Image (tube, rainbow, N blue to C red; front, side, top):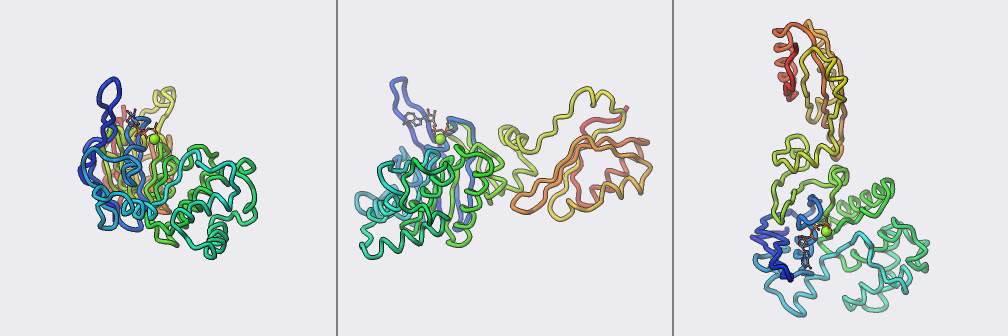
Length: 337
Ligand SMILES: Nc1ncnc2c1ncn2[C@@H]1O[C@H](COP(=O)(O)OP(=O)(O)OP(=O)(O)O)[C@@H](O)[C@H]1O
Ligand SMILES: [Mg+2]
């Protein structure tokens, strides 16, 4: 478990103090994949780098598995940090070393006996699917392969925690997906807690259990990814969610709409049910879809539809009550005219 307690990080610059992280409190459970989202400059990297003390916090505590890292120094701190792996957007591999040597480098830092080193490197290469690239130099690898080396190196010393700073931001969508799947596998099979930073909600949707949204060094919202996607509270969170679940309908279309416009949300199992078609059958209303999608947040469906309902206002009201009775959340965007 990671407990971040009233953590602040100030930077002294020639223009005065800059608050990188401003009194952040967060608890991240063991085995969780936790996402930190925010725009550039929000303080995500500062916060992440404080977690492994790559950056020393100005105030506050970082507790990892019951150990307050801010109280540790020298050898004790070095040892604790070996149990925290980190991967980066631009991989940070050593270009003069082969893939195997890059990984061995991390093992050497933990004084791994030489006879154990080779077998551990083989094991790690297998885990990240790079067995055949063992003797290749980083320049000969694709971005996705480089990140796999980064992951193998981060896992070398059996960490309990893996920190990922925009680990997929330099990768194309397909490669991103394959890296996210690898991270999920590592999380599940090795029970490694993962904290990842991203500005892409698709990344969060794909693998995170819980998330926090940061702005100006502060956490403005936190919670389970599903709850936040279905019911974002902070303005900034809504903005981020709209990048995935967006309901832009051209004005020319809206101008033609005479019925009521409603936003209908289905959470979990009911998403696939024919609630809307039942409603149209049971009440004297007509429904026209204007927009809609079913997102799968870690395999749990979240259905969101924008639709026009035409009919007598009383029937529309009853139809909405009916949908709500079957588990939908309905928001009237505009009444018919
Ligand atoms: N070493 C530093 N010295 C001075 N100011 C810094 C330093 N590192 C970060 N900052 C400042 O702290 C704030 C938070 O920066 P940080 O890099 O943590 O943001 P971020 O959310 O990771 O942004 P990005 O998405 O661009 O990576 C910014 O205002 C930044 O300018
Ligand atoms: Mg950053």
